[in-house]
Amino acid sequence: MRLVLTTDTHLPKRARDLPAPLWSAIDEADVVFHAGDWVDESTLDAFEARSARLIACFGNNDGPGLRARLPEIAYADLAGLRTAVLHDSGPSTGRTERMAARFPDLDLLVFGHSHIPWDTTAASGLRLLNPGSPTDRRRQPHATYMTASVSAGVLSDVRVHELRR
Image 1: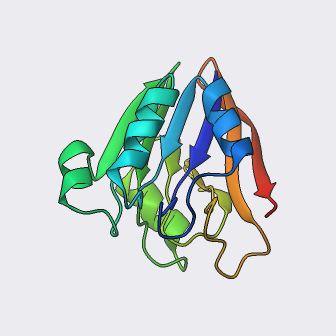
Image 2 (image 1 turned 45 degrees about the vertical axis):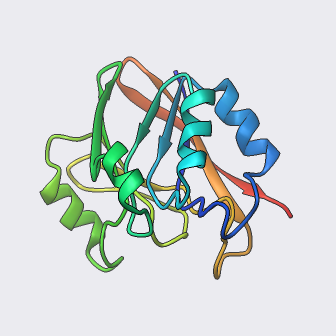
């Protein structure tokens, strides 16, 4: 199962559209995660139209329309891999332990908000992934998104993809 992970798209405020490599990855993925801060409902519409399966939540910059359509936390089982996606995981200090305590039954937590790619594993085995932002790199050298694979409940091949302007 091929996964694409993205967040903080902030369309159309930070960009007019997503970079073509991300749209291509979305078109080819079996499952797409979006960890919020869509900003515009038409972006959600496009993701729903182009994703084989979308697992998504709203973010702090998402208005009432998006909040009516998306949960704060979305949960899914992917071939035995227990996952969730939320926007804001709080400060980076203590994040791994805090999220492991909050989500003891998960294998994978996808989050956003910081626009900073993050990949760590808690002592409990919980994997935390933040794909960064494909449109607003903030203090990062590149805009980013992630891909990964799932087979028999095991996450593998996690990769950060840098997007050049």
